[in-house]
Amino acid sequence: MDIEKINNLIESGINDFHKSRLESLNKLKLTDVLKRKNLYLYKAKNIQTSEELIKSITDAYLSSQEETMFGGVLEQIAIGVAYLCWENNAQKSMADGIDLEITDDKNKTRYIISIKSGPNWSNKSQKQQMIEYFNLAKKRFITQNYKTDIKIIAINGCCYGKDNKQYKDKGDYYKLCGQAFWEFISDDSDFYLSIIEPLGYKAKERNEDFNIEYAKVINKFSREFLNTYFLDDGSIDWIKIVKLNSENKLKI
Image (cartoon, rainbow, N blue to C red; front, top):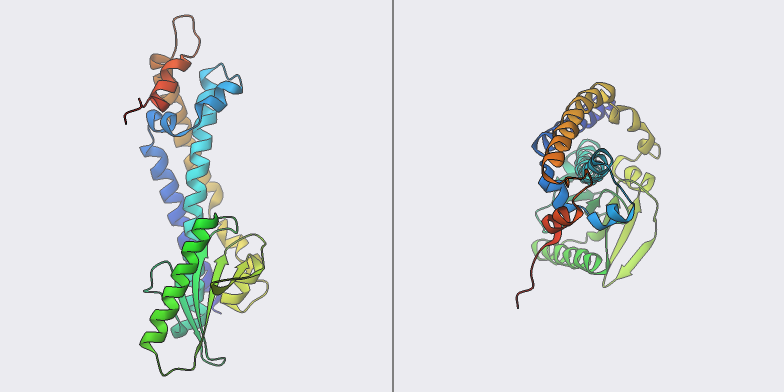
């Protein structure tokens, strides 16, 4: 492996993450946050001040967005690492639901890989959908390469966590998580540790920039909230914000 290329790949992904994170923050509107969070929860927690409510719902909203964004970054880094380590034997898959295909010429094996950020991404129907994608990809490969003796192995690769069980359900597939997944695509058992440092590329500077904009958003939201969702006696107008969040009259 070319360590410099690996580090550049990771740093590029992290730059994209911080850029997307800041852009998402600057586009955020108070009504978006109020409409998408469970306001009954915050009422049940007896939140009584605008500052506490605004920070709580905004932080929860941003945390959910950031986890999704960063998951996408990890998946793209994993694909990039596979390209660098397997060179011409790794390629983006053309099959639906499959992210990556790797050919191991030595062992006459074709790996079809669906990449997720962590191990707990699926419910029963989502897992079934993935299995169907694997089966379709296998059929597609066999149809296009009917004379080949290459074995096809399906893998659900997860960028972090632990759940290294072998699943067999209609189509056989392996679930490789954390260290096992990174070792599979890099052929380095310690690779999952070596990406920690480059993932922190310019983290301090980027977070300082983010925190400046975050403070502006909280101040702006607080002013808007005070002007729109407070009663004359200084208490939060829960009826008004819950109507914004959930009013949807039944029509059948």
